[in-house]
Image (cartoon, rainbow, N blue to C red; front, side, top):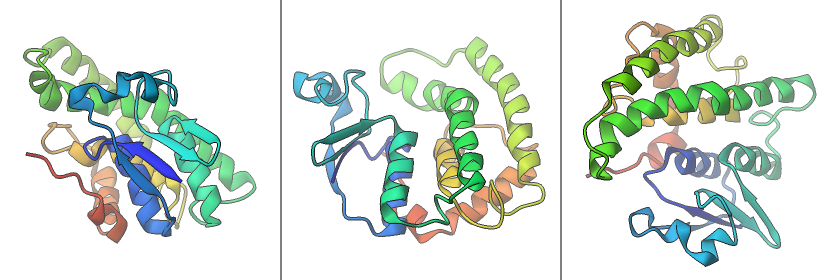
Length: 206
């Protein structure tokens, strides 16, 4: 299997952490986003959206990071990370929630406070950050309440839902994501930070 990725991408990082955690054999192919390699015809043939990450497994190509997470967890055979029965749909619920609510909210802080100037987009937008702060208040409460009575998102065990939801917060400090009101999220992120696979895949900035 081959993963097309960039190490600064938190969507790629969560997949790398899953690979490190499970020991799956996956080759990493660097895609230089600064040179626009994701828009080259050969890459667009893999993902017409021109985005990373992309997984190639033989003649099967898969894009969308949370789909890749589910696929690799299934390939690993780890039924704790990717449980069976109703528990699997509980995990899927959080993957969907991440795509619809969590990642878009947190990533606004990441883009505005970290990457916007680097990409030539100008100064952070107060309006966008203001809206993101309101959204974080709402969505952060959902996740914080979920973590009030359990160590991980769906219960006592780590699942791919934890890696998926933790990934956007990988840049929480430099992106100035306001987590002061969410003690349960901060404690949970502390547990995630202790995972060897998480430590191994921490992006190196600068």
